[in-house]
Figure 1: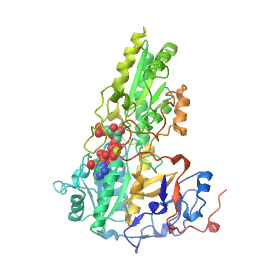
Figure 2: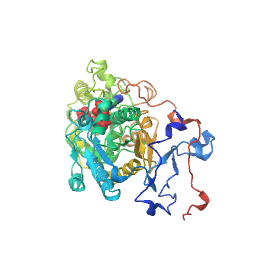
Figure 3: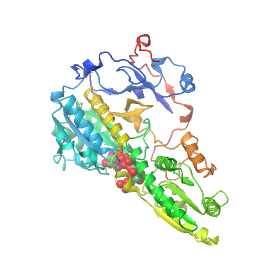
Figure 4: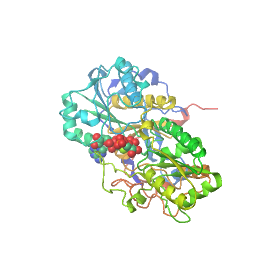
Length: 494
Ligand SMILES: Nc1ncnc2c1ncn2[C@@H]1O[C@H](COP(=O)(O)OP(=O)(O)O)[C@@H](O)[C@H]1O
Ligand SMILES: O=P(O)(O)OC[C@H]1O[C@](O)(COP(=O)(O)O)[C@@H](O)[C@@H]1O
Ligand SMILES: [Mg+2]
């Protein structure tokens, strides 16, 4: 992947002239293993070989702007009206982020007016723009105790100019968009429309997706809660399969193009025999095929547990005429065929032909997973992301997402966060762990990896960049204006 240093630069609305409520607290702070000082940057890459390859001075190494409070801010809090919108599929923690934004804006910055647009971007159309929810600390006090989003969410396209009109008409100068890859694309278009009109409106994204398919973020919020919930279903199906003669347990988990939930949920329990994800193609028939593998398990162990991500094996459905290849949802996301049903039918037929008496238990708990409340870990994560989002907005950052990258909170320019899709790397250590846990090195790597065109997994124009594993090639197009701290004055740690 070739990045220009310019790609890492965060857009600012202008100079910061107002004192921040955090100025005093920040006065003596310096970079440490636990804090990144304002002006310092967080490295994009984290191995010696990757960094050495660039052969660049430290202040030109690819890096992200640190998130967090600034000593000076761009907006006068007395003149800030904030908007919040949640878009796309649900994800644990949406309410936690909304609550965190409202608390930080009101308690620390003294912002008086926060409006929640309802039902995603649909709430920002001319028809719906006045149907907002006033978000006050009282209104959001307990919302973290419920899954979903108090604002509602939706899929489907809206006109960017019409949404900008809504911001202007409702007097919003800071907008927080909590959404996934689609929402970040929409946010980029919205930002372009704002820029075209030369408006002083900050747009900050808080990336959301239980699929964990956004790049440049360690793990998206809600992901841990989602895969923790998924383990409950793997556990149930394992019990059912083990208690049936020739038992087959199949759990289909979300993951349209990225199999992270399937991997993590499987690893958490370590009871799955076979894990199938979109990133690793497999075949049904033949000695290397799934059916032979399932039969082997049933004959040796008595039952088999399969965890399958919904996007796995879409090529197999297509071959059998079970997939309408160009079908999309309202947001343009590919509509998938039911891989779980194909597995159920073909495994039943195969084992019956082989003289066995299969009992297949197939469950698809998708909506029972993404609707749960955030667990304690995600609750902390959501709150900290919300804090970072508010600091970014108040400091006049725009067209920027706040994420955690290599444990630090950073600002990632929106074009980068939609530059490709984060997927499980078949050559990476996560998939290796899955293969180690299932113990059977299945599916075998006979069909190439992610750099080959995925049957149905490829998103229009978005694919994992070739060569990512080799590190990022940086085009040194100008220096970043990095104000690195004086390392000699940095505190020392035992
Ligand atoms: N390329 C795009 N340009 C403009 N708007 C988009 C684009 N992709 C998605 N959107 C809009 O963003 C919102 C959320 O997208 P969606 O794909 O449903 O969920 P997510 O943001 O979780 O990926 C929808 O209203 C959708 O229409
Ligand atoms: O049925 P819906 O609401 O369209 O959602 C299904 C999809 O939502 C997802 O969770 C991802 O959605 P987002 O990109 O909106 O996070 C997929 O895994 C799943 O295929
Ligand atoms: Mg999406």
